[in-house]
Image (cartoon, rainbow, N blue to C red; front, side, top):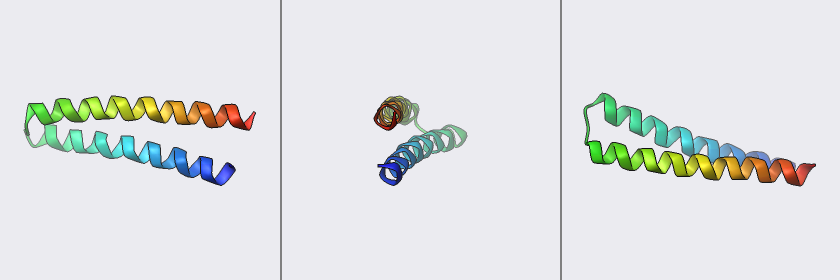
Length: 62
């Protein structure tokens, strides 16, 4: 569980970071505001999932 849990957390954090980076790039280039809003919603959703994953793994390890 230790290695698989760490990998799951890593993938969740990488997904959040990727969507955040895409949103920042879109804003810096003056891209579509609709795309920025969509990326913001995806980021918030992915952050929620990442927090759930971290809390679940911590609970399982205790």
